[in-house]
Length: 153
Image 1: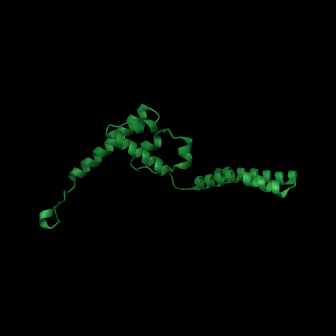
Image 2: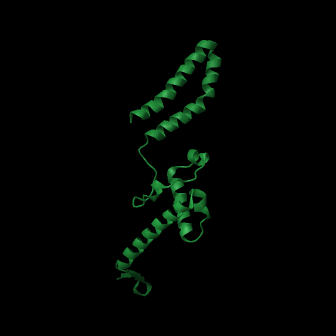
Image 3: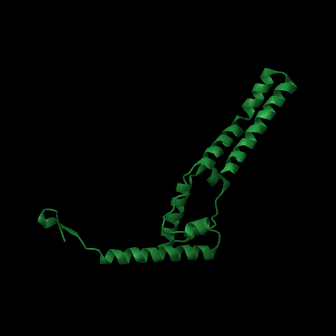
């Protein structure tokens, strides 16, 4: 992870060097302060990027499905900056559910090619089939209103 340190350190050195340069060249505290205020947004983005880079929390997806790790999605820059990976993954999973129900427009907007869409849908169909078959072997429990809401096997 040494390269993380290099990625974070380089902008810090450049910004600090530029600050010294502005202070020496202008020899005016007000001009130096104005310059510093003008680059504060860039510094904030850099700090946020460093926090994100060092974060150990990765994109959420169901552990049993590696299909999402292999997909190439259409994601706008706005979405990358303002939407968390968890929220984006939730949009993908909702689009997959809608596609399994027959409405494929949302998934087509999120996934680049038709082959990837079909592969993703096939994997989720298999998971649904496995989940359904394991549920059919489970013991069925009913609640009967006539017995005072007692659980009856």
